[in-house]
Amino acid sequence: MIEIKNIFKKFGKLEVLNDVNLTFSKGECIALIGPNGCGKTTLIKSILGMVIPTKGDILFDKKSILNKYKYRDQIGYMPQIGRYPDYMTVVQIIEMIKKIRNSDEVLDEDLIKAFELEKIFDKQMRTLSGGTTQKVSAILAFLFNPQVLILDEPTAGLDPLASEILKEKIIKEREKGKLILITSHLLSELDDMISQIIFMQDGKVHFHKSISDLLESTNEQKISKAIAKILKSESHEQNH
Amino acid sequence: MNRIIKIIFLDILKNKIVLGYTLILALLSWSSFGLEDNSAKGLLTILNVILFTVPLVSILFATIYLYNSSEFIELLLSQPIKRKKIWLSLFLGLSLSMVAAFFIGAGIPLLINAPDSVGLMMVIVGCLISLVFVALAFLSSILTRDKAKGIGISIMSWLFFALLFDGLVLFLLFQFSDYPIEKAMVAVTAFSPIDLARIQILLQLDVSAMMGYTGAIFKDFFGTAIGLSVSFLLLCLWVIIPFWVSLEKFKNKDL
Image (cartoon, rainbow over all chains, first blue to last red; front, side, top):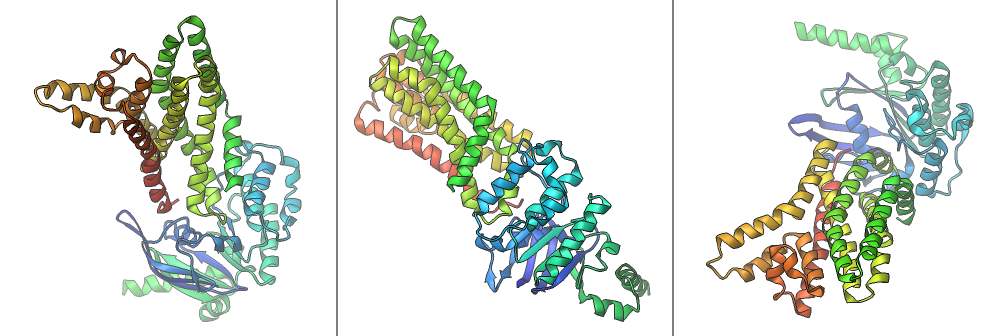
C-alpha cells in the first residue's frame, strides 16, 4: 500500500534519513522502533507530506505522493505532541476537522465514548493536560475510518486505562484489514499488537522482519528480549 | 477553500485587537473631521494615519497571527488539503479582516465627509496598503522559524518603508542635485509602497509641499492617467510579489 523508495532527507548538514527503502502492505501492524533521533518521526512526516524529502519517492497505492494531497483522505495521523489552537474548545476542534474533511464516510466515534470525552467538550485546548490532548489526537486519527493509521508514540502520556482502551482499538482496526504504523519506545506494550517490526538507526533501516521470524531466529518469547539479543550479538561482533 | 477562510476570519473577528484597531481608526477619522471645519485638513490627518498606522498594525498583527497559528497550520497539513490552499486561505482571511477593519474604521467616515475623488482614492489606497503589509508579513514570517526574529523583521521593514526610505531619497537628491535625476527618482519610488500611496493621494490633494520631499518632486510625473495607473499597478505588484515568494517557500517548508 505504501512504498518508500530511496528516501534521503537532510536538515542543513544533518542527515536524518539515508537511503530508506520500505514497503508496507494492507492488514499489517508495523512497529517502527529505534533510538531517539534516528529519523522515525521524519520518516512518518515524509509519508504525510509535512516533510519534503531531499531525494527519493514515496508511493501510496502505487502513485507518487510528492506534491499531492488527496491521498491524505486515507490517512489518520496521531502526532507525538498534538498541538492545537489554544482558544478552541475540544468540540470546536472536532467540528472544524469534520468540516474540513467534509467526508461522507461513517464517523467512528467509539473512542469519544470510550475516553468519556463528552465531559470535557467545552474546555479550551490550552487548559487540557498532555494526556487529555493525546486523547483528542487519537480521536481525530480514528474519526474518519481511514485505511491507514499512523500513530507516533500513541501511548506516551496516556494513563494505563486509556492506553489499554487505545490498544484494544488498534487491535480491532488491524483486524478490519487496515495498515497501522506505530512508533514506540515501550517494546513491552507492543507484544500483542504488531505483526512486523522495523528497527532504524542513524537514518537507516537496520532490519525489517515479521514478528514470528524475529522470535524464531532469536529463540525468545518477548519482542523486547529478542531485540536486545540482536543488538547485543551485533555489538559483540563489532568488538572482535 | 471557503470553509477554511471562514474559520480563520471568524477566529480573527473574535480577537479583540482587530476590534480595537477598528475603533481607534473610527475615533481618529471622526474626530479629525469633527475638529476642523475644513475637510481638507481632516483628510491630511487621515493621510498620516494611512501612511503610518495602517501599515504598522497590518504587518505586526499579521506576523504575530501567523506565528501563533503554527499549530493550526500543522493540524491542517495532516488533513487532505493542498498547501497552496492553506496559505492562500490564511492570506485571504487576514487581508479580509484588515481591509474590513480599515473600511469600517476609516473608510466610512471618509466617504461620508469627503464624498469626492479624494475620499474614494484614500479608501482604495488604504485598502491596498493594508494588503501590501499583510503580504510583507507573510514574507517575513516564512523567512525564519523564530518568532522574535520574524517580528523584528516586520518592524524593521515597516521602519524602512515609513521613515528611512524617504530620508534615503532625500539624501540621494541632495547628493546628486547637480545631475538631472528627477526621472530616475520616479523609478526609485516604485521601491516603497508607502511612497506610492503618498503620491497617489497627493495627486488628488493640493498640499504636496507639506508632505515628504519625494511627494513634492513627483507630482509632475504622475499627474497623468498613465502615471496613476502605473502607480496603482505597482501597488498591486507589491501585494502579489511578496505573497508569491512566501507561497513558493511555504510549498517546500518542512514542518
